[in-house]
Length: 190
Image (cartoon, rainbow, N blue to C red; front, side, top):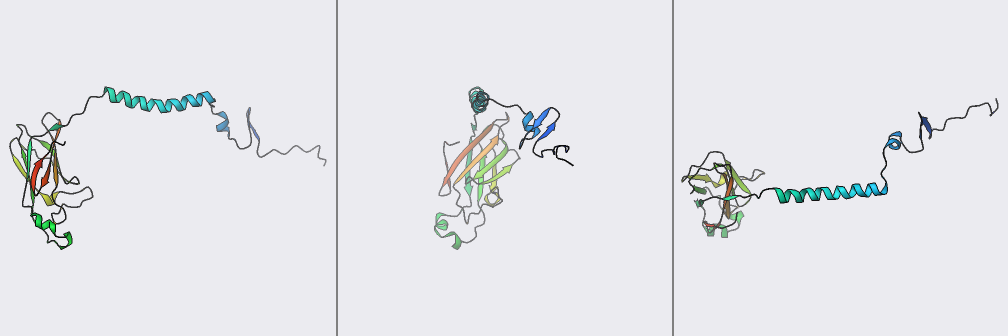
């Protein structure tokens, strides 16, 4: 058989699909996709940068101010060790039992959905309302971190407390105080 009578072998890198010619290394999906010009790509990337910034600026200007009210409260502590206890290295301290945080609602409306934090990391939640003018006592060893570690007076001196509560009008409010030598020192910080 002569070579002129043989049909040419198909090229494995080039095939005909309908009226579309698929060339080497390019799939039919890529060939059929739209292409952006240099100007179109620049415009699209500019919009992708400008739209989020413009959205944040619009929200910043048109959203109402968030205000977290100030609770009228009194926080005190009972059963804390004296300062000499903390003068000793914590590995040599005896285990200390006791210690309470006393929270008093000085407002004329009740608080609900309490979240009380001590030393910024330990917290307790209480869904029982505290009526106006009443007091509730919380054991310090019942405060936990998010990882489950308990507050222990052997290792931690009480330094600060913060109350978050919801008022009857559904507004959140807070109260913060620091402790010096076991005594609460109210501050203006929210």
